[in-house]
Amino acid sequence: MVNLRTVQAHNATLKTLAPGLVAVFETFSLAKCGAHASLMGNFFLESMARQYPHTSFVHAYPSGVATGLMRELPIASGISAVLELLLRPFMVPVQESGERHLLAATSGRVPCES
Image 1 (cartoon, rainbow, N blue to C red):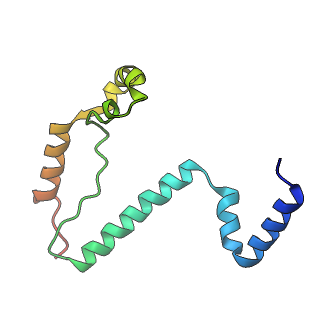
Image 2 (cartoon, rainbow, N blue to C red):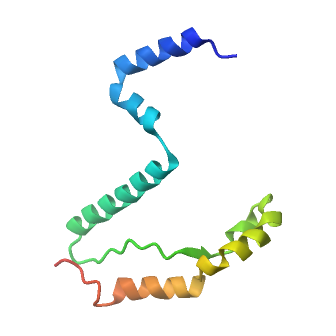
Image 3 (cartoon, helix red, strand yellow):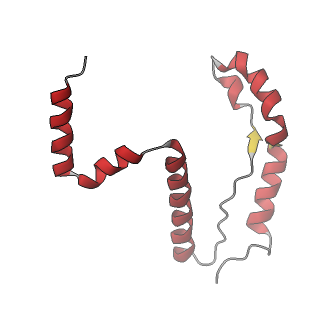
């Protein structure tokens, strides 16, 4: 059982040492975490584009890619078939995903900034 006084003391200490960190824990959600990760990826690619102006960078989400990853997980063998049926309309074959990314990376439609 967790001692309530210990938790309260810990929270008070944490608020004193890192007040911004407490706000993160109080408002954390997976949706916000996903949005944050996406933004950080965008910021990273923008900084790389500034450092290397003669290179095109593509930040793409190709949808789900049917890579067969689930078959490698021991507990997933049973649910893999069910998930495959449910997610099939949203999946893109590996070949098509590669073709799309190659086109985006080498086509004149997505020129580098310089």
